[in-house]
View 1: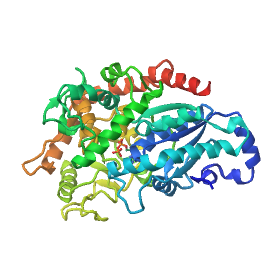
View 2 (view 1 turned 90 degrees about the horizontal axis):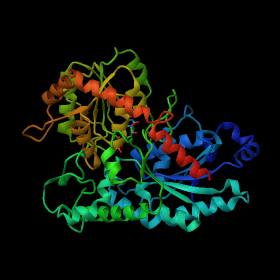
View 3 (view 1 turned 45 degrees about the vertical axis):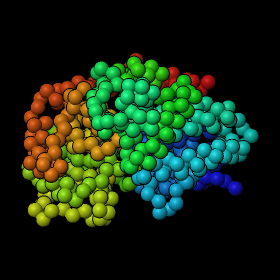
View 4 (view 1 turned 60 degrees about the vertical axis):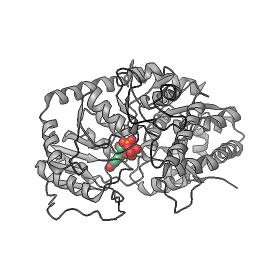
Length: 483
Ligand code: UDP
């Protein structure tokens, strides 16, 4: 019995039903790669961008999501999606959690995945490779999210190529590689927990961090220990390959990359510049915000989005709504249906909130929004994808990190690259409406920040042009995959 769900038919061009044999012929001789993201939006997106680039370079991709995310991707996809033709197939397997389990509980998710997924991934490859005697149809390599680098053991076992992509900053890999030193220096104990609250820095030039913000310090001490153990094993597995790619550039993170010279920057991984819906989104993009943006003057709109995980306390949500009102500026605000910590499906906007100068959507085509000339600044949770996407478009940031690596990314933005500002908390521990207005005014009035953002944009984009480092690294990688 087939171990995976497959929507090969749905996501290839509709002509496939009638011309399957001619398509099959076309696929012969094409290298076939299995791509395995960690089950989260900020991981699926960069791996999907990488997959699409590989398709452009002549590869066939089988993109393996968990069943849970596969369903979301398929239902967020409609007839306008940028169909990749027979070279892109989306399939899925279970993540090991039950239907009601909380998939935002990262410790349980990691335990369940490790218990369930490796043997299934192996069977998927064996199934696909056993289907056809034609060697050219067989999967010849795996590109796994670095957070799923256990898959490299499967690649080793089956004698196929294995590579990993780090979808967060290279600095996070540098920090993970530095775990033994952090323990030796007395910053962490042997369970990966901070010995005491203090500041530390991995290398001069990298952000100064607070031990409380170490990315695996999430949840209670049991969860932290589970996540830390998972991270330690990921580091070991990731050394099984010489091909460790990262969605970053050498200008952004020279120090982190010098500490981990084996990591190859290939960023920024972005969607291609087209007018179609992106593939891989968990929620359907509301494209109406693009025509709304078309009606706004250049550089006039505040874009507010907090990625796929962030939730809001109702009091803080109200302050944000009233703060946006106070700015007296146009705004485009992404309010996911599950953004409220209290689980209310309809988040309560305060009575005073008119929202007349704003547009609120449940999920935006973010890269297109950031590329739009009307966008003036980005109030962001500083997830790494959002960070790279904002930087690549020269959009200055107001940083509102929530957890994990976002706090670290914020330090890069505010202290190292100096292309954004943070918010201060009031005596109640909230970011007040007045603080929001103050920082919006300060950011938009600061020509130096805007200048630096534009300069950084130029440097980042140059990496992907012929001769740029990311361009060269990607091409080397493609050559190796094709060997
Ligand atoms: N995103 C989007 N529409 C939205 C909000 C986010 O397309 O309304 C995309 C965004 O472009 C990014 C991803 O979702 O690629 C979020 O990843 P990130 O690393 O920024 O944050 P995470 O969701 O992992 O916290």
